[in-house]
Image (cartoon, rainbow, N blue to C red; front, top):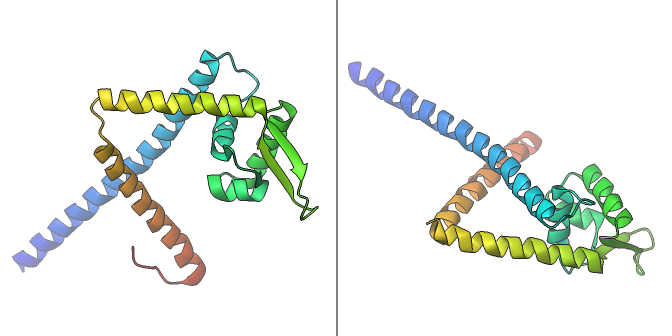
Length: 174
């Protein structure tokens, strides 16, 4: 009997540790995202760019040299639909994006970067290059980043599985 309670206690301890680590990972993801957005904002400020915000700059970067519909942009960038529509409208107004009706489907509106948008995209790309160089100098290896990305992808698959479980009633294996 004592052996069963010891195993149970050990299992409870492991479960508590997993729960604590899970909650810590969630807090870190949220904090890292906010800090990264501040880094992008600082980059915009450094260049005196005041007519676009950090989220919009990242949307531009994700569009790159492609031409996309708002729906494709939402799917590609994992942005919320209403926010993408608002941000696209603001970036068109500020001349970062060119918006045109599709020649094949007149109901569909496509967006692409203007010259101004391409210049900002290059600035953001240059920022990422500086960061990559600085990461190496600060002893953050590509292997460490690969391991972190792997853990993030596992969490993503886990959460998608939970969402699918709620919709379908069965949890797929990871």
